[in-house]
Length: 412
Image 1: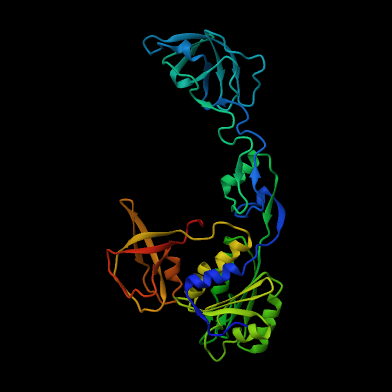
Image 2 (image 1 turned 90 degrees about the vertical axis):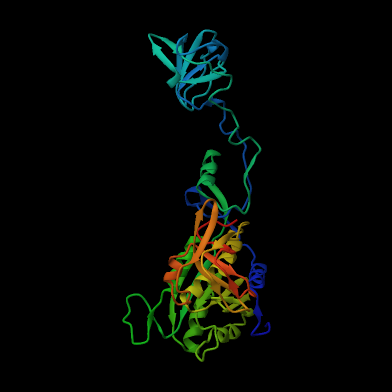
């Protein structure tokens, strides 16, 4: 067991957590279910996409030199000798000098042709087409393999699949793809002060929002959440619910990790022989945060205040879930922004303030979303970034640049 009361920086906490994670095994799934899943293998193309040269316009396949000198006042007239539609055959279709073949977008380009002129620059009449401008070789062409060449590594192991990636898999004739398994995640809420949705609230109680916030975040990052409910403030109840949670790859609890008389989570960690890696992080909100490990299971004891729980998830749990799924890109983007108000803080902790950024004249500007108390979840709902004020900085003036972590952007 590591030294209790171990306090680490936010960077140290992230490093300890990621060094504790081993990616899960793989499974085969339909590409229809592959959105946001992480590839377990490189995808190497064994075909060209597109497979042949084809037209990027509806128009006429012509020989470019036949259009030399064409204009609206002096059009060139060519004889129409055929038509090719998208998906059609070009067998027996050939463009000879003085001729043109009508062609549709996506149709293969016939022999003899070296250019496509679109309908808008022509006029068809009685089997002939008038050409109103010169065209050049390879105009309006899509070349074979210009999207994907045979032998290209188009997607890499560790890539988190987006919509376009799934489309690429389909274009390469993949129906099934090998991905990392999704981590199973148990969610535990602690505290007699909590009432769940639909329960009668007693004096002094509040609604449990943390479980539902975290449940949604876990789904967002392709985990498989299981909400186990609220444990009462007794050692017996707390231990029982943690024993149920041991079926999961990741166990997340909220509350019960500070110095209160009824904060039992760390005691339960000790009873279950969970190796506590650290107990405090030099960050606000979210200082009381316990991380432990037992075998390949990860235990995250998050603070109970709603904003603290969510920001802690973003900084520490989210990267762990992505690493479990083998993802290569796990960092949220951080950019510089001009601060639009003064900020004062105490030294000794990194402050993560809920902020809202805008872009003016290609520059980022940011302001806080109001009340920064860690119980005010509304301030997180209104935020699209976290303003990151370093540990030893005590004052930042309006107009100075600060770092902001973007919340609604993909990992990089």
